[in-house]
Length: 452
View (cartoon, rainbow, N blue to C red):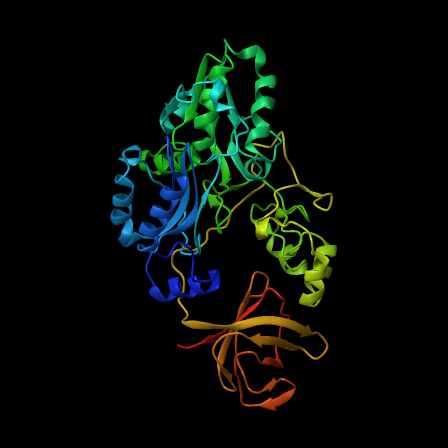
């Protein structure tokens, strides 16, 4: 019985493109008592793998927290796999504001101690005694009440690109840090203020509202379904958005636009920008905001030091990060002195610029291609790139695609190639191939053969 992924992210991306089927990005959560999380995890993997469902899911004895991508045609079959469990009958699926076929490229289901790392001892309070759920219209109404205090229970890198106007935005890196800070900050308003909270999809507020009621707050409210569901209701009901900017999301999109307002800056040059980047250096992976110009100039890196590293031979990069924990290449959410225009804590409600309209990200030109290998080196003066062939074969006359975070997607036709130091007409798996490339390539680049 298959309980793990058999395809790499690159292979999965090609399969998705070749299939040409629209996928939906969605999220959901449920608090429930699960006696055997390991069996629950395995059963879900088997059921979802058959439906080509992908995503990042956490299960624990307290419930499930899922962010996923599924083929639109499999939506009802997917719902049926949830209805098997009583605690997920009729569960709300938060559909993303902007869908992307590549939002997730693997199915990862992990058993955790908790579905959200909150640092709380749940035995000390009633986790089911939660705050009042508010839909978008009621949420807007209570925000207009001068007796309301609204709190963003997300982290600094999330609230910086978008938040509700007038919200308290704690300068924290984890959800657990925000709880005692808000408790201390609002301790004198437990009886006379409305404590209104929100997060991305509602799961953090579900536990936080119970915690603050236990701490003695009398009037506790939470945004039902979080920012994702709020944005959906805005469109359906024609409501005014009191959220400004972009909603950070934990998948390959790294954000979905709620309003056209850009309220943050490129962390490197200060230009209005709200696009996050994950530092290209595998030994860093710092998450930061980077404009297109800085992305090109800095080669997707957060600093000149990291840029030097990514231009080293791969063997030297591996040696430099030996013994370092880089979170299995998941972005690092901290801060850096190199980021001169980073803001957190008290944030502006004023737009710095308007986002340019872009084409529907679902509508992509599908290019049939097969992965050949990866970049190994670029000889600047000679304008020659070196690649290792890891899959399939390559021949003179082939049309190829070189793709990477900074390089983008560049097509060219091979006129001649050098294989293992000798000019020849073809290369096979294991060969080192060099040929002229009229643009700079990076070690993060992949090479594909276009087959149609």
